[in-house]
Image: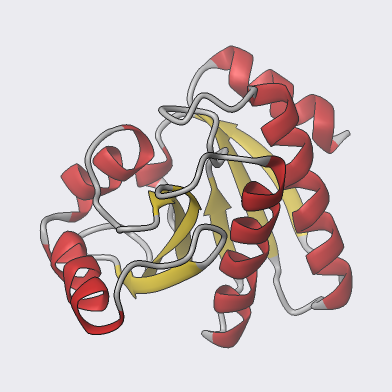
Length: 169
């Protein structure tokens, strides 16, 4: 059965499921926006795990993703999708980071996950285009890997949620 794709307006850190995606930078420093919300609710253990990954393997390449535990969040994992960082945000980095996050989810048996818009916050990528890229990449992935049961796209504001719904319809 194909995954259920839906949009929720609000704070992604409240998502209850298997995994939540963080709109990360490639150094995995969690500060503002989605990362800040996940850090505040989930606790410093998430940043500690990110720091350990970077110490061990160095920064991610822009377009890659990494997975950590979720601290106090109501999920098992945080998947850090690095669409920005040492290189500027691009449509390709959003596409690649989205795909990398989905592949990690698949490898870890994730059945339900939540995505924010990657790159449309502090990085300043146009929200409309980021929404189109995200939804298209997720649709393509769930057609290939039907074991993913649900993907929730989070728009923090009513306008953001409406744009995501438009691309989902």
